Length: 97
Image (cartoon, rainbow, N blue to C red; front, side, top):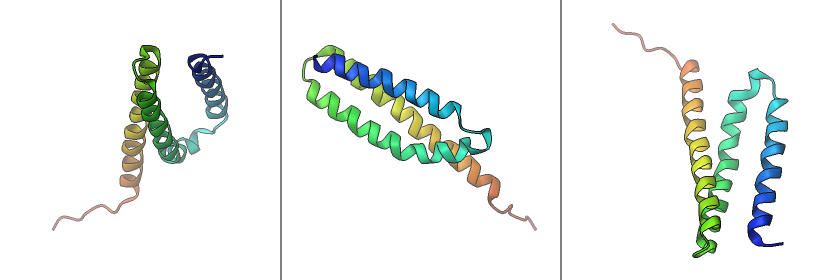
């Protein structure tokens, strides 16, 4: 089995597992889950960067690594925005005099 087919299997199985796990989370836990997913997405970003570096001139692997990096970056930014918005809901309102 080539490296590309192994990488595609990991992508497919990881996607299916992620869909199964996220589908079972109650709506009240989605925001804390998004905050915790930032760490996992950071690891995914490192793995995607490693794939891009190791791919050399192999275009399919470069494409797969770039797409993975884009999705992970999107998830990290979205997670920080959601977390910031959630924390703003709990901050004290400033009183104007």
